[in-house]
Amino acid sequence: MADLAQDFSSRLRQLIAKVARRDRQAFAELYDATAPQLFGVALRIIRRRDLAEEVLQESFVVVWERAGDYSAARGAPLTWLTTIVRHGAIDQLRRSASRAEDRTASEEALLALVAGEAYSADRGAELGALQRCLDELEVEPRRAVLLAYAYGLTHEELAAHLGAPIGTVKSWVRRSLARLKRCLEG
Image (cartoon, rainbow, N blue to C red; front, side, top):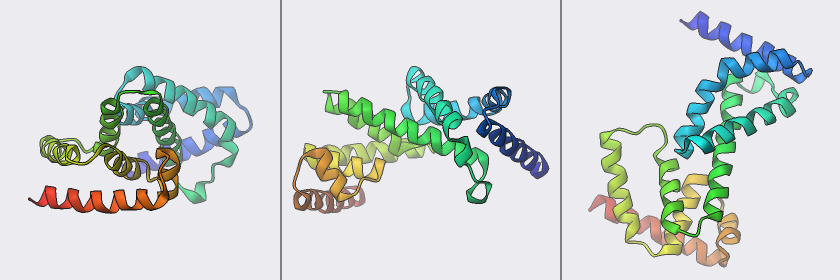
């Protein structure tokens, strides 16, 4: 089994090297070998088939343009490809959230991202408790926490995104996390 994975990884490295030299046949082979798995990554994050397909297409454009940047020393080829798709999916969520006027829909998208791929019945109960506790927070502090957790935004990035002073954002996050902890423990 390990030999198959190693052979697959070696084949992907070869294909990426050929794609870097603008080999269209290698690009088609790379797509065929990885698209189903990468589509699954996008779909788990976005939860919408049409947007996941769009992310996959955009990700392969990035692969075509940046194949020369891939370095086997920095990671496995499938990890590199998955990272491109993951970043594309998160960017898509950000675009969707910024266009959405309905805060509830964007918060659901953030919660879906937080849920990740480890969804189970127990995980569903935990997320239900988290949603209940998040509902107890005021709107802007709740968004600050969700954006910080889901996207890893810094306090400065949160302040810019939310249009609030950095001190306020820091207070929102600190107090909200304390409230969430008390609520989830209670």
